[in-house]
Image 1 (tube, rainbow, N blue to C red):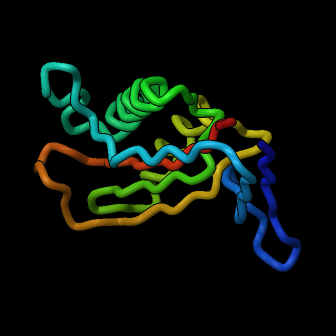
Image 2 (tube, one colour; image 1 turned 45 degrees about the horizontal axis):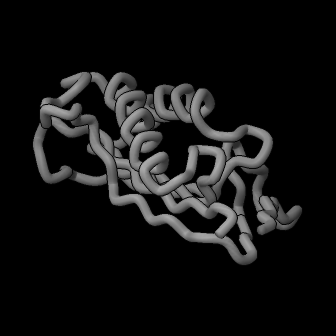
Length: 133
């Protein structure tokens, strides 16, 4: 299985993500949007976007491990952030940098939303990963 992480020169410089990711063969894993809930369904980091983002990445690690993957296998990530503001980007980027491959970052979308399913949730993240199949 081979993956390519591409940033065509005709597009703007990418900051922590790739514009295009290709994968040949392998097993594709789709992880539902994860939120900042622990194993007892309690909100972790209530009111704190950075803390919730950190816990969501921990949940993503667990979800991917169940399918035989890691965060290094992620080819696409989508962030949904409640009431997104420019100052939120630093928190998200700081946590993302700790967890995602910076040499070959996945394709990425960041979407501001009015609300998520539960008022205490500030961020939801879904990923697609590809592993050798």
